[in-house]
Amino acid sequence: MFGIDSSELLVIVIIAVIVIGPKDLPRALYKVGQIVGKAQSMARHFRTGIDAMVREVELEELEKKWAAQNKRIMEEHPPETLAPETAGETGALPAPAAAAAAGEVPPFVAESAPASEARPYVAPPATDGPPYVAQEPVRKDDAAA
Image 1 (cartoon, rainbow, N blue to C red):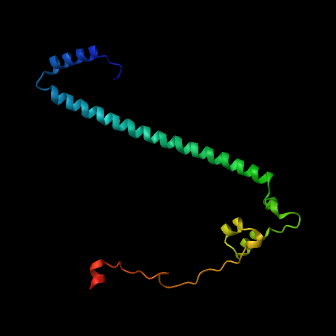
Image 2 (image 1 turned 90 degrees about the horizontal axis):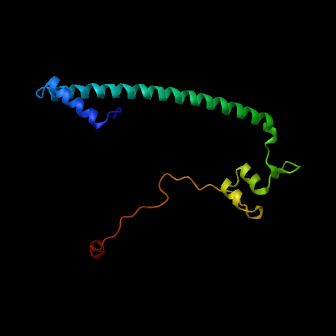
Image 3 (image 1 turned 90 degrees about the vertical axis):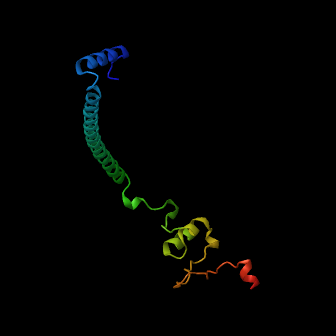
């Protein structure tokens, strides 16, 4: 603790008992504890502020780095060259992907079903209430009556 050995701490306690006196020593130790607590609180607050400033600077640096990488990637691959590789020379999409693009088949079905099995997607009818009727459980006592 603060680079003080036990023998040095013992000397400090003995001098404190002699100078302050055994009667006022608890009150003095209480005041010293309050001062040390306030100093630790201020140091923690200062450290938190410094850490927040460092995090903000790091985030700004990362945002600049990401923006530069994004700009480089967009220059290397313009948006018109990002078409699917499965389009071929004609630019036509495969059957499941074309059906999904047209809104006929949900995307998860279009990805998993072969073109021969792709069926048009039909949304379930909208209802005002729940799709089932909730029933209370039947007790043995109610069934007998």
